[in-house]
Image 1 (cartoon, one colour):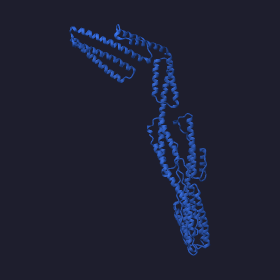
Image 2 (cartoon, helix red, strand yellow):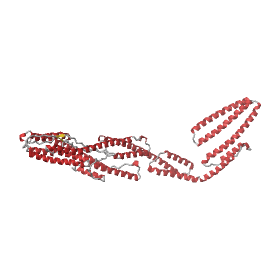
Image 3 (cartoon, one colour):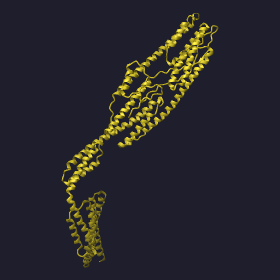
Image 4 (cartoon, helix red, strand yellow):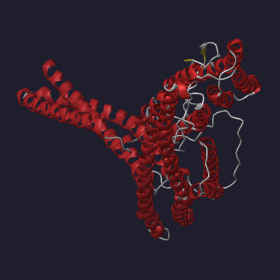
Length: 627
């Protein structure tokens, strides 16, 4: 089956509103501390791409990447990334993977189509190994290892940043703990703030707590600091300008069409807002509300986007589950022919195409549902390959058997022993029908050879037997004339010895040669009907005459000896009739040939003769009783 790639999706962390105390500079007369609730957006580290089970489906983004026309171009780009220090995004890797497998499928489809157009059989197609695919997978693995190392280094850097920021907090606290020297320490404090701002990411699990601790330390410093109102006002003014610019940037994000991009930009704005110092207390709530309202717009869109995507992923899971159930439900155990296997194969190919049109399932189920889908497809195509292999072996065996028959037929085609060769070729034809099919590419060729050999012999036989056929038709007319003559006899009006006439007709019939084979049985049946009719009449009258003579012979006495003889004769006839009846029963059940049917007819005639003899004996016994 065509492998369908399925990348691990990048997790997106929703922003979480956390209370953060914004520092308020101390007035000369009194220290004023106010608090404002500020959201702290969690930092979302970009995940390291794992091996894909499906072809990547890039998440919606305004970022676009190059479109490649050959597998080699994709591999060259991956090699550039692998051998340089260039940072590459997961989106570009997904784009490269998508391009590669698009080209790979196109080339595979083209190779298959060419194979079929050149006369190849679908079940014999085997794709050639793709060296570019091997290079592609090796480079992707190398890049993943490289990105994993970068991610590990970044995590170490975040941990180091965390420790540095803890040290800065400790230094600010140390400045605050020495009120007499705090004014002189203001420049050190500003330097520490700059250092804090220069240090970037820390582990996400420490970000909120760390920020609160820092805010508390800064507020404590400002509460202690005895600066002039002008210096504090100057700081507030600069901070206000910076926060207004951040509010404007956050508000402009509402125009961004790609919510993922907008959300990520908002995370950076939140980071910058946290790193910006306090503003005058009377403006603090106003500026924070403006920034929070702009953030709420983006957060709401982001939440709606992921809720809609979650619903869509659940629908996709239902569709993919239905496809798996359909494939698993096919009764492949009952498939017995190429057509049946190919019919199911076409259905599964259509389902695979449908699968590609369906988006992601929920992340926790995405890999599982694909593994189920791939297992169902692999099971079918493995069984199909096993069936086709066994059929190919059987076809090749059939081809070898039929080739032997062809060679035998070709050896007999020039024979002039018409009877024996006809029987031999008929037997070869029967064997041919009993042997199954052969590979399609040999089917017509081997049949034409076999048929040509048979046709050559039978054409020669027909030519040689042309004269014999004319003689057989002449014999047919002679035998029909004998049947017509017998049919015309009315036994009651016949003058002379009817039995003698019938024997002469039989002798004349026997002296005539063969008739056409297809007329033989029908003609013989007509002869037997007339013979039976006339012999029946003759036998009936002969029996009557014998009974009359018997009656005359017993008038002189000696009836006891005659009765004993007749009774013995009656027993013999009964036994013979019973034997014939048993034989007829066996023959009727076991014989289906024309020869067997002829034997049955002959036995029936003999049995009828025995029954007639039996009736004659019983008539004689009756005459004795009357005497």
